[in-house]
Amino acid sequence: MKKLLAILMCIVMISCGLSAVAEGKTTVNLWYYWENLNHQAELDKIIQGYNSSQTQVEVVASYIPFADFKKQLSIGAAADMLPDIVILDNPDHAAYASMGIFADLTDRLAGWDGLQYYFDGPLNSCKLDGRIYGIPFGSNDLALFYNEDMLAAANVAVPTTWDELVAAAKALTTDKVYGIAMSCLQNEEGTFNYLPFQWSTGEDSYHINSEGGIKALNLYKTLSEDGSLPKEAINWTQGDVMNQFISGNLAMMVNGTWQVPTMRETVPDLHWNVTYIPKDTQYASGLGGENFAIIASGHVDEAFDFLMYVTNPDLIATYIGNFGYIASRSDVASQQFIGDDVMQLFISSMQYAQARGPQPEWPSISDALSTAFNKVITGIATPEDAAAEAQATIDGILQ
Image 1 (cartoon, rainbow, N blue to C red):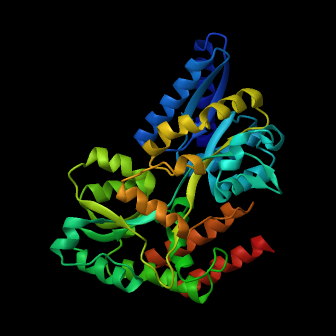
Image 2 (image 1 turned 180 degrees about the vertical axis):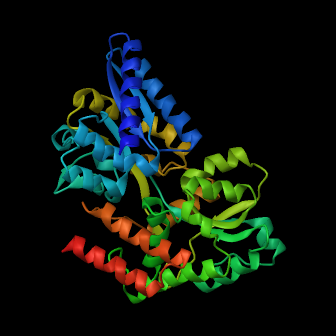
Image 3 (image 1 turned 90 degrees about the horizontal axis):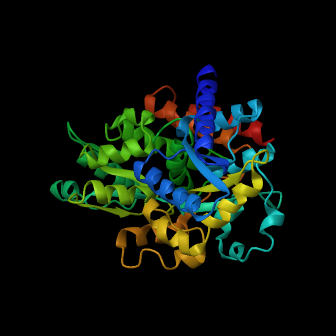
């Protein structure tokens, strides 16, 4: 708690210092959690473009690590030390809207023509009780990345089913290379990567103590016990997993669209490709992405002006692909990634992508799920016991 408050105070002091440099402009503070340096640079370009476009508002961005983001929002709300705008993970949106932190934008957006172009899934993640508390930033989903040279050298076919995935991962594992990894953190990143496996069994997000849920946990157990899935993955972000893959330490990984620009720039000579996440009974992927939300107690008018600038379709078309995202606006998405086989696979995978929530108590449900697969990977609990414990927590939340 003391550490988080100290970080919050530093952000406030930095913002105050920048306000003095803004030459009379109203300072609008924005928080985001992207660790990807390309994303940070791209966001900075967008903000600088806005700041240069008018003389009234200066937007200032601050990076908050993903692991601390939700804590700082909660602490900031209690301490009245919130920013004016946040870019946050879409499954968390309803939880904070239910706390009264976010401004209700429904009436402001009623006459905006742009609203009709947003896909239902991303836009619904901004809603609570029929009211709109934000605007989607962009969407993404997950796929299986694989090292083409490693698969060819091991004479392994690209896996399409769980049985093929287990066999391929084991065959690709050596004393220097793990067969597969995904972020298995005990937070939303880990849950995001886990749920497609549970969904692939035909199960939903809320019944892990079921045949499908236990089957998904057993898949994690098998991969871990085979040595194909490194136990260190419980500490790896999605960015860490990508770094392991491009460094040649992983043959396959589950990851998302946003990693593609960085990989192409960082390792242009690496031979890799993507395919659907291997299935149990059906293909599944996770619908990810971020939303903009305006803090109700902040500079709402000025923040809304920035959102109208950054959601202009012509501007979105210039930056959304650089994030490796699929536009949440259909009019922009339809023109994206023409001729790009990798990104077309991700667009195709959107037909199998499911959303987490929206559910005001989703963060607590996610925590129960991620605790379960962490215990299975580390051998602390069997899939059956971990599922039963998680289900008791989830049932208590939903009752």
